[in-house]
Image (cartoon, rainbow, N blue to C red; front, side):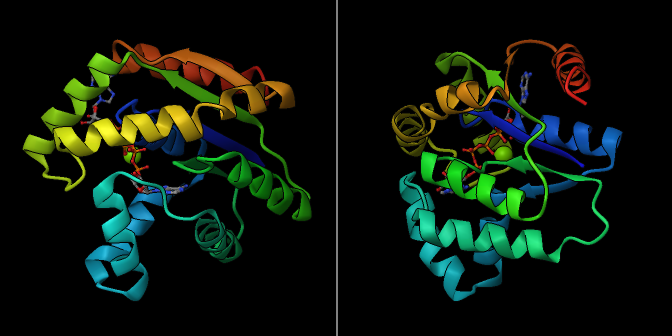
Length: 190
Ligand code: AP5
Ligand code: MG
């Protein structure tokens, strides 16, 4: 199986590039942000808990997030592999993911890191906020998301480097060029 972690700051293009990877390799896509937004839209208890946290730009507690992810993995049948988008976001989540995959006789094939400068991230997200109106795409919440990313998620770069899984990609520029670089990185590890 081909199991990919797509990693990067808010607005780095994880969702955009995941769609292309899914189409090319026939993978299942688990976007934890999408899962949470679905729960919010459905008005579930989990959605209510998640909404107030997401609106502040904070992270959902690890234990809850890991449980949600395990549930999603259990539901996959005949999977060719999974692209993990927005998970892991902390070292605890990365360690839990490794255990979950190992228990299933699987491993991460590659961690694709999309690197994009902060000014560009802010630009992209403010633009998206105007178009699609994602509630967390306003300047104040974006700043908080970027800060939380720098403090809690960025340390995962080194974690995956030590695991020998990290693939650096310049995430600034044309979508096709970025996708080409991602494909080359994946195929070098298949
Ligand atoms: P999540 O939904 O994962 O949001 P995020 O990480 O903030 O990232 P985005 O979805 O905003 O950006 P993206 O990298 O997918 O970029 P995109 O392709 O859309 O999480 C939301 C919240 O849920 C979190 O803040 C947290 O509260 C909670 N959460 C989720 N997972 C969690 C976890 N594991 N643990 C705890 N809490 C969790 O692109 C952005 C924009 O840029 C788009 O408009 C796109 O069209 C454009 N764009 C993309 N590529 C380019 C390019 N190359 N050039 C120009 N524009 C581009
Ligand atoms: Mg996304």
